[in-house]
Length: 399
Image (cartoon, rainbow, N blue to C red; front, side, top):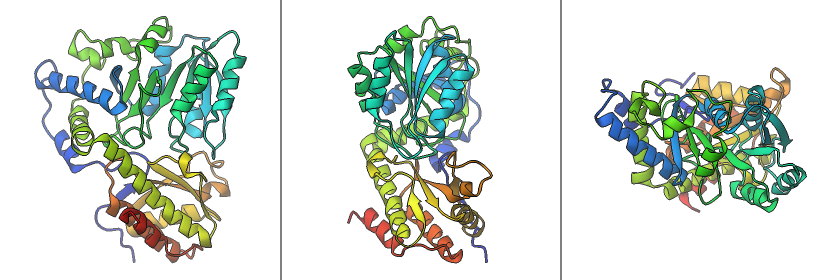
């Protein structure tokens, strides 16, 4: 008998669970887009975007998704024939590099695989080998959503500096912003991209790009920039519409203003980071217990290299696909598919799934997902270790 009636729950890595307050803020008539409250609200939002990225530098808003902000960064940083060094730890790092290549950028990639973080020593060596200093930007994914690898941004910056290389550092924080600790200024970041639908708890549709004065100057000569992607009028508008190269995304802005208030002024970033860490460890504790009695493993062995917003895991013998299907049809919980961990259509592709714990998520939501997964493992006779829920509960209890 299916028990999927009632409110469904998406435990996928975006769109994340959205607070009722955010949705309610969006449920209103369209405002005047030429003057008045919307102008003041947008100014406050840009200030709050600086706060959430921990930077004094420039923040811009695009009507776009995260993939589009990759292209916004590329368009503003590069000219055709310029070179980038891409550091890949999963599908999304590879995809960002592919976007750059398709736009005319020469890309050198170091692929660290799907189960390990970036090695700063290899980054330093690659930059030292670039004796003519052709590499203009290093592209790094803070947290790759496909693999759940979390990279050490400050260590990569240190590697660039140790090599004495002038390359800028551009970081994809689409899956990590508002979940994992991130410090734009302290870590020496030059460009950062993110989107609305994950840790910022707003429906898909907004992309964000932050950039330093150094990046602004380095990108002035870019010949890839077009009127829409150009960050200059967005960051320094003479007229309100220039923030968005046209009509403002009014209702997304209402939702974003509310979510940033919740993150920054009510909960506070340090607690947001700590909450995500605890909920991530809750999920990991359950998987560790399940793995004691079955072919169930977390993708990243070392907890220090796991992101706190999403967990990638393997359940062998096609167990991941079977469990995902059961959880959704029988219990109303949707888990994330595995991305890029095996060739699509192969039997191995059915062995991977992801559990998201990002954004507007608390203990009962996370423990509820784990309880549903345990029920599914039992119903499907997938071998697994016992006491997973007890282990998860102990983490939430602070034991």
